[in-house]
Image (cartoon, rainbow, N blue to C red; front, side, top):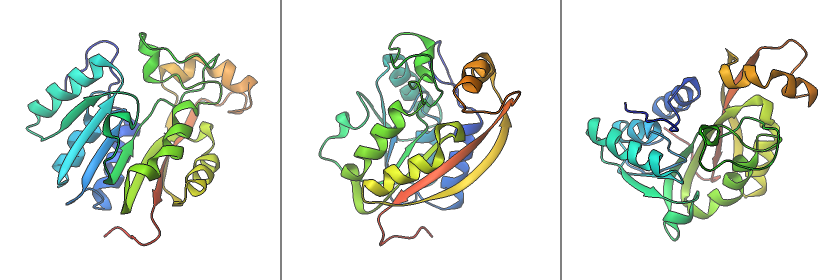
Length: 220
């Protein structure tokens, strides 16, 4: 896949979410929305997993261009839209929403728009985008729809579960793996320790996949 400067390169978190989606057969015959698509890896994975349609959304012009190119290179039918979270698909409903949003705690609550850090900075607690997705996703789900989110456990998995439940969805954790800190987390280790997100000397994190769904649907 092609990843221009400033576009998030799919890594272990994307692979973890894509694997859960494939194993649970979440995408098959469903209209899928990928929120914060970056280079389009999850959108392409959904198309290859049998989705009826795939729409990918990102606020970054570079990401929109990269997702469009990568979907064409993969010969995957993906409709790419530019905009903020659910705004480009207002009025539509999807059987599956997937997202690997920025989730790394940052020094301030200012979200960068034009620097590479926009791929990971998510406010002081890492939840700036996660909370907005949890609050709004029920409005774009079909009556039998589901959402799959991946993020670091430093952002508080229980908070994500509670936010989805507050939005009227049944929520549960589906997968969890431990991985070494990447370069960004390493660079912020002191900040994470000072704020109590990790233990002193800790240089690994847990990645989690969380599902929110309507009560009347179980995946195959």
